[in-house]
Length: 517
Image 1 (cartoon, helix red, strand yellow):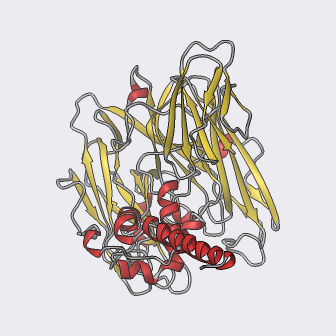
Image 2 (cartoon, one colour; image 1 turned 180 degrees about the vertical axis):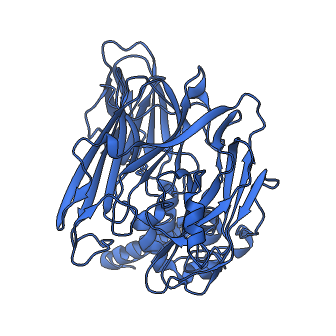
């Protein structure tokens, strides 16, 4: 006969065994859960010959680098995506969902099991095929061997377009000549001849310039980073490429790439629409719009600058691209319309010059006449800034050099026409209508924490019905309910834990945390 104490020990051991079995059965594996995430979000930069420092093309690759993956995913350093996703979402995002991040970290915490290798997805195949297979214009920089020994190099290459009349760019893609050394590319156009002269004056291919193209006459077209999709505009829209202009490629070569060959190419598709609507790319927020300028950051100081400009006419905006140098630490840009709530544009809380780019909105953003565009930009000229180019810190002012600074925000925009707000920029979106921006709709949820019943109090002037959706912190939808008036809602069947409550209608969206106990 088994004694009471032995029976307890046996029961505990049984529960522990069962718990371990359940954990083993439910824990993510490489084959079933993680491989597809890595192949979709990581391998584009992490394969042989790409910019990533190690490949992620197999289970063995990922297992060996599990510690590096864990740290990068936990800290949101990889995939590199500077904008704050809680502030604004964009087209073609390179970021992990909450569920994807949870699966990767749980997989590593459980020893990074492979699972059944026979069920693993096939790794992606990378080729040099062009996304624009038949470009209207293709230009390639001359062969260049990187000179970046112990410091990063920023080289500009001015290439004649040989376009004899104004044309309109519908799509543009960057084809790195050497994916292992091309960290990012800024593409400018210049019809003044300045950049061609700078290139001709340097005996070697290209010329060194950090801030931009080296000429105030050059205008930005797009920024490119590894993993970025080709920049494309909807049918009927185009960015003007001026006749007899040069395309200027500013390319970032990381330290330690000295001697490696690059010959990056740019492919362009011109629009064939006879009634093209011109899209302007311009630094709408610039030195002239500063409220507390001039741009000067004394040594050993952290300083915030504010810019404001009033929109003179109703406009349709396709993308935004902030631009600073190494002293820049964060930027937040938003719009204050004459009537209605503030519109978030972009928030980059941890600015890194090497990862700057152009960010397209999921849907074209309509901006009303009289709207105030405002930026709040922070610069850190202290020893606490790991990217500070001077040691000890020195006075930093506006300029094109490595140790200078800039305060620009480029927008791609055109004059508004009815229906522009329905222009979809990313066809991979799951929804067919734009998501309203997050805001406080005045809806109260209580008690919080709640047990079995939740009470929702709607504003008195509510006329449009709401949809309540509850998500787990892993992103799983667990409840959907139409709300037309204040009242009680049963949540008795939900497990205890933390939930995200989203309440939305056609005019707005409110998000709250909810605890069930």
